[in-house]
Image 1 (cartoon, helix red, strand yellow):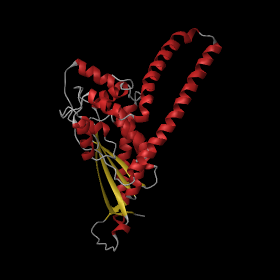
Image 2: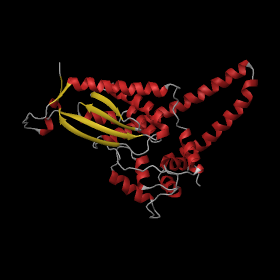
Image 3: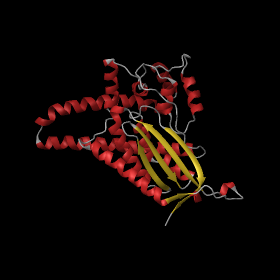
Image 4: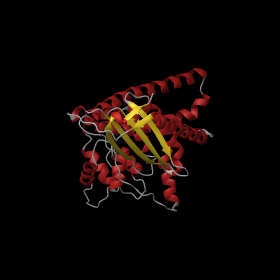
Length: 321
């Protein structure tokens, strides 16, 4: 296979949730849905990549598509393969000889590693800035979209399947302390209490009739409901990711409320968000904290997130003094 394609072999492996060596349309939408392309646009792209017309994408088709569209990034992906091999080799050799090095030589090794890390971080900042700019531009005239296709969990007794799933998830494990589940449960309960208090402070009165002359100037709040089903064995990691997201979203300008409802005995969660305007929500959806939350959820969710939203007159939601 052409140099640089190992990265996309790994992409294929992570997107292939049921390890059947092909990507269904639902798996494709679940992994590649970026909140910008519509379901129809993703299906069109899926059919374009599926050159064998099998209603599935194999690893060769995926690599062929990206290979033909790498453009100026072709050398970079080849370099990523080389860099990965060089780093792995250097770290293995260092681990073997580092304990026997002199005090000054050990210092030198640490300086070199920090410098390598700094150089790579600098490159990442440039890449992230370019990516953020492109996403912001793409979002300007489009509403945030969340894919709603459902992938049913696959039940298998195959030891090979279990091993492959474990290997695939190993690189994204989140460190949780021994008592982490108890503290996270307490956090969810705390959020539930917060919802109760907010319900006592918020008055929703949709009965009143309001007549306005210009719909474009209507003061509308934006309500968002996001449903998640975590992979059972990854529930702790999802809770940690969700906690970080809720705290970050709650601090953003334009966010009125963020609350979580967890369903006892399951890995089902619903996040409710109220934003002062749809523009505030779009800005948040394109923010770094939101993108990190969606990226990390790829390997944590049993099925794609389901998102629904609606705008309501802001006067319907009034905080009581």
